[in-house]
Amino acid sequence: MVDDLAAWAAREAHVWAGWLPRGESPETIAACADRHATAIGDIIGAAMWTISSGAPWEGDLAALVAEHPVRDDEGEVDAAYGYVFSLHADGPTASVTMRYMCGGRIAGRRGPNNHLTIEVRPGQADAFTGRVVDDIAISTIEAWEPAALAFRDEETLMTARRGGWSIPIGYRIWIADGVGRVETSAEGIESRHLAGGSYLAAPDGWGADDVVDGMLRTFSANGLDKIRHT
Image (cartoon, rainbow, N blue to C red):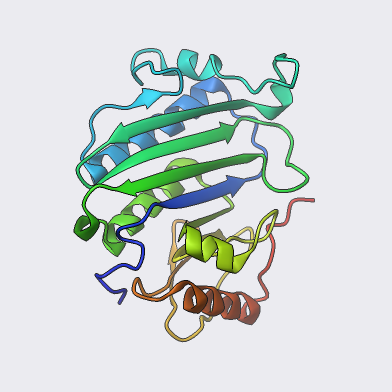
């Protein structure tokens, strides 16, 4: 079992998830984002979300998404890259900002163009437990069905030094079956099949070096490294 005393509990941490192009419409994006926001709001105790412009996340959600297309350096809409926007909410457990870039038709050269990040700033360190992290991660998987997901703090991110199309490393990792399946895991790393993928969990009390080492050994044992995209 993971520890209740989390190494990241008093620090800012984040979730990253990426997926291959699906060309989602504003209506589909709005439905996924609303499902996501509702679930995360329940976890952190927040009822009100605002979108990037400062407007409340309510009413015609597809129209709100459509107001945020990706634009090129000249300010022109670049439809091939979809939409980019953020949602923010404050709760007693944490303040959360969710940034989305989705609906694009291009996979990306340096990494997935279609992706999200969730910045989590703890409100109560003792409430920001591994169970809360699991709930946030699972809600994200269910709402967006990504290719891969990781929850990590800055120390783990810098220690791992993985980017681009590499499967990310963190205290929690989810890898879709289409990317690869985990059949065995390194000592200390929990593994279970969840929502069409493999969910990995490192002990919450581990330091970054141990997390990165355990996850890399698990990847190696299962022939995993990158998200296939070509």
